[in-house]
Length: 182
Image 1: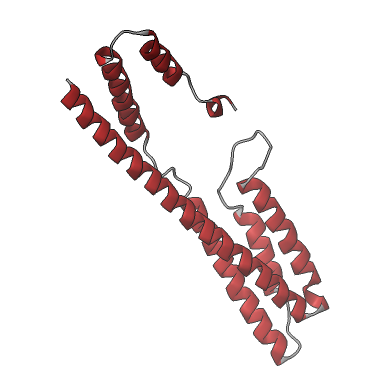
Image 2 (image 1 turned 90 degrees about the vertical axis):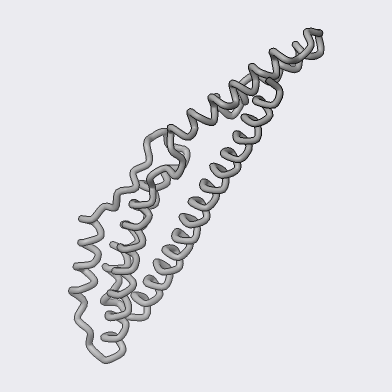
């Protein structure tokens, strides 16, 4: 019995380590994409600023779209579900406004071309973030892991000598963590 519980404990530790590693990898990937997206938005704002006063409307539209996208993807303290699907219509309006800029010199032509490329890259990165929003940990794997942990807990409680210290330790370890209720 002790050997079987030891084996289940080892397998649980392995699976838990793999789940944590998978979640960290998904977090790191999303974090780097968000940082890349933020740098491209900042650079696009600088390019539109360098374009001149004709691009003020495009910058304002871009600023509003970015603010709405941030609220949509990361609602913060609001108690509403996260929606990671890109608002294609708002992005299309900003892209159309960018396309309607008419350059008056070669510098503005280069800046418009660069801004168009950056806007396309931003749309692609946003779509990538939406596609990657699927949870990286499967529900079946979590159920299996929790089942294994229950088996370990029950096994240790069966094998432990019945004294006050053991009963107290088992009761304390059975309490749920406070993070579950926040």
